[in-house]
Image (cartoon, rainbow, N blue to C red; front, side, top):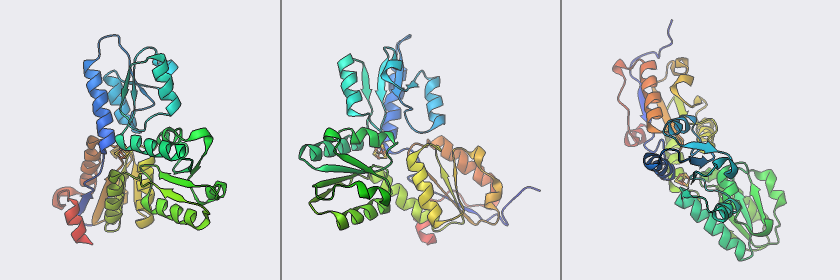
Length: 309
Ligand code: SF4
């Protein structure tokens, strides 16, 4: 017996901001334009996957754009720098080797690099709130002078802070706003010198998080769409799960179990910054069918979602 919700009156609410952010759209567009103008035999390589979404990486490979893990692997092709940016030493090496480069570093990540460099040059000990394994964090923090930095990803990391120094705080652009604020408050309590705070969480992230919180608090089931290796999608998943325990993180519609929607009247959908529209659409369409769509409402926008509260 197929698992279906109790009746047809199911609202499916998709966050207006779901999917590609400005920086990701820009990077993918730059890669696609380069793929269109590439001459036969020329290499076109992204340093690391262009975004944390295997489906998009695969579709770029079909157009001749391949991820490489190091400059050595590049083998004379054009190097595309993804939206996360690269470590300053990698950029130095690219210049030294005279490699052809297409820099798709998101301007907001570039701004964070500039802030951190300036603060570091002015003698501040720099603290980045983020995941030390994330390429954006590695790229931004590489601009700190003489190893005078600390990456903080939880209250347990705070003990490493040299509290008597002037401190400059910066955040990963996709950080959870509430988490960043809580860490800032903890640092204010222990700091014995000046503390400079840069708000580098980008607006796209803030809007996405706010919409996801709002939707998660008004639905019976929340679906978060995006690469399992995508840091910002995982953060959205955690944010939604803290509000709505029936939250599921899927990469594509193939991972959805229709049983999740049994009895649900409202189903929310959000998606990380590296999730393309076509995957979101496929997920939404799958949900419509799974929720026995004949009587279900069309996809709603956030203004309707606001009224549901
Ligand atoms: S999340 Fe923000 S900072 Fe990061 S790539 Fe997208 S627009 Fe740029």
